Picture 1: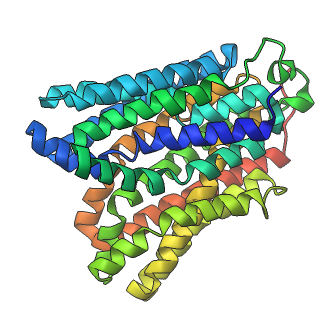
Picture 2 (picture 1 turned 90 degrees about the horizontal axis):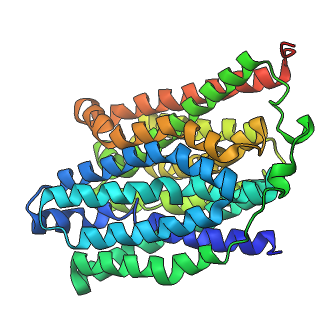
Length: 397
């Protein structure tokens, strides 16, 4: 049987490739794609938003398949679809071709990014998957660090079409073998054996109304997390400029978010590994509002503190997206439940750059008060959830 560490490393590397070649691709190639095909860069990002919506729709189906068959066949299929979508994008000559290619990529994103990887390790290791989930996000936290420079280098040497083809080839020669080597699962593996209340998660003995409330609150927290993360990824340099930072400083400070996210995951993996996931998540939801408060009160001199705090919180919350459903609801049916919980997050993620862009256009750096309030609302939702966990009502007979 393959060790948990080996499985974690393999999934972490495969996830780095998947994120670098999809989520982080438009930031570097959108301008070149639009110029060559004859559409605006914003239209390319519109096609990317379509991919996120497709991913939201396919996520629960992919999760249900992982619950039944294990993650190996689903992740293998995602590599093939990623490769096909990137190859199709490389051949685009019209705006409609770009949309079709990104829709195909959306199928792969919904079945091949974090949610699928988390469901895979939960299917293999059941309630013991928290450390594996943390390890996967720790490795994949370098996706932008690897992906952006490599995409830029490829675009400058072989053009954006060649860059897409190289990423497609990497899915076939790197990602596919890694996923092929994942352990097979049977219908009697660890996750399937978890039939007792003690193994199903702390929410297994909650009343149905409490379980529904926990699911609603969790979905809300995930949606807020993805909205803030995506909005900052799209507008952070602009916000820092509006706060008074110089252009070079704004770009450099914004680049600190990636390393800070990895640092947050290291903190989760070390200092917080024995802490309750709800405690870790609540602390993480306060990081962005605290950073926004510093920036709002002190201006550009606090820009670095804001970027680091935002990155730290976002890094830990990415792990919470995988561990909280496992904690509350247990391993049984995790894949489908995870897919359903992430549907609102994927939908708001698709609209986050545009909607937050309107806020920045109207309020400039004052838009951070809006995102800070969203972060505080996520903290409140987790506080309510924690209160419910302590005050368990007996389930109806």
